Image (cartoon, rainbow, N blue to C red):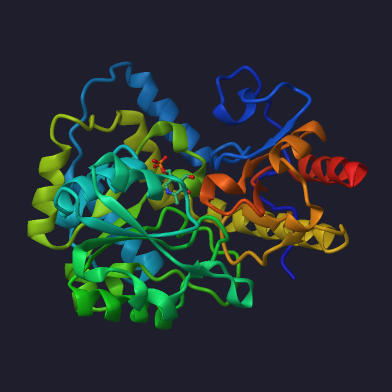
Length: 382
Ligand SMILES: Cc1ncc(COP(=O)(O)O)c(C=O)c1O
């Protein structure tokens, strides 16, 4: 059994985020514990904070030209962490993964084309096709073995003949399912049969909690997948850098890459120098911190699972990855679940936002003491 408390980094340290313009903390008054949007309450790794201090001490924050060395850091990251060999020129910098989802819809399918997208998913997947005037077709999901994922058996029901693009999220948010190689191969076979390009949002790739699960970048699945994918990644979720707005798209196919880059020109701003500094340091120097973070998150997940197992009417799905628990509250028969839990003093993300209103999403990327207080409050009202 791994230890709960890390030896090098103090994840129990409380840093007051009230009145810091933190989206997560300023949403509610001080009597509600915010366990919603996907950022964590841990300070970023000390090595990143030091690198940022050093960059700030230079005193000038002009436009930044990403160097080939930075793309090489991403290349090395994929090779060492995920066993995928990519080329530096495949890396396209984008300030956010959501911007990339939109850019892909805009540039890689024609007006009024159908875009296939998972039905129960992070909201941007539903919005992006709409925003670029595409028709979204929602792929049915399954909860088989308590893993929320695209129902591979029902893929043939989708109108693939009118689609050019499929959006995909691995690890899946919400639910935290980590797709296996076999599952990815099934999706790849379907994409090959219908000439689909697949956009794979892998922002949670480095937050795998289950020891026997491994993240596989979609482009690594087959030669077809590599030539027909846009793989989206960032250090933002893992190292708690979301506000610094830095991410990348890996697009191996030159034609797709050109279309994507052209769509970006003039409407997506460049990445700021601090975002780059933090991301480069995260990928190359903060893996020891990530390792200890995962130990802490696993313990938080196990604590929550143990607690919810004894609270009648709430069922937490087993979490293979991420710090976002997906809990079924439908048995409570609440008229307005978000309002009910907020009145109890716990603010969670409504499942309706992800297209399954039976659920709530609880962010456990926080100090254990805060989770314990949230559980006390939930117990009190049930
Ligand atoms: C699956 C997924 N994609 C994208 C994002 C947001 O990414 P960004 O802030 O880089 O736009 C999130 C944030 O929670 C997410 O969970």
